[in-house]
Image (cartoon, rainbow over all chains, first blue to last red; front, top):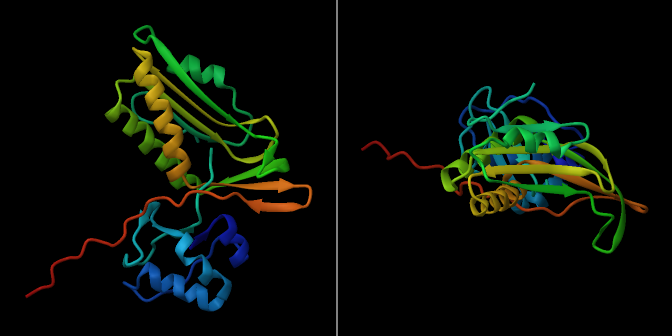
Length: 77
Length: 159
């Protein structure tokens, strides 16, 4: 799990590993973190997810070893 | 690590100052007739507040992948020769260059169009974030939400 930008500030750190039921979805993963850090829930509509460094839909199933990130609106340039 | 793109393109994330001149030299060749360069640098104000400095961070491995995708798209869409896309990370002071894009082409029109497409696409799709520091605090800059798939393609249920 990787967090960037304001999400890193909300969660309090940039990355961690966690054990998660095989084939659970990115949406379910976000829900787990929202329970742990309730403030995260309000960012749900302004975040996109990536799986293994590609943008991914919220219903994407997860597998062991996947690298998932929650990405706030990007502001490079 | 200096990852390169196809077509002898240059895609880099750097942690020090960017000098556009060597990049322009590297995309330049005798069969070209034009290079268009975009130099993005740190403005001294944002939303009517005086900016002190910016701090850029990136999902580096994914950002490089997306920069390479942009370079590949340019070759598909425009009659260009070479592309350089270099973005700087870390703390940047007012006036310092954060991003340089240089596109060479036989003719100017393709180079202009490709350079514009590259910076617009970078700002929308490459996972880089900037934090703006003001005299009275700091905020993550408003940005653009990258387009992501709405749903995974469903496999047909077994009958």
